[in-house]
Amino acid sequence: RRANAILSEVYSRRGEPELAPNRPEALRRAHDMADAVAARNPLAFRAAAEGFAALAISMPPVSKKEHREIFGEILKRDHTAVDFIQANVPPDISGPVLGALDVGVSFKQVEKSNFYAGFRIGGIAYGP
Image (cartoon, rainbow, N blue to C red; front, side):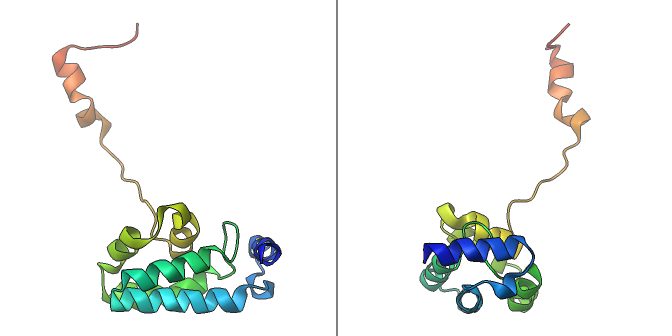
């Protein structure tokens, strides 16, 4: 099982996930995750996500395009599905699952002049 996971990882990183030995199982698990999100079943989602993440080291053998096809309609229809996914994915496997779904942590630009206004107004300065 571990050898298949490593081989699946190699094929995924080479851009050839269709050659990975764990691919049929990964596609099935991805569909199981999508069904669990649509049904809002956290136990089924966790079980499918854990099985999905176990099929490779860090990059499961399903392309981002296929993930968009599987999850796209659910995510378009229900904007709270992303919150459900982020809340229910186990933390130890969040990297492969969220990375595949493109729903990981996002960053926001902060206006620095407003952020440091307190330092300027308060007269606190660091440095020379």
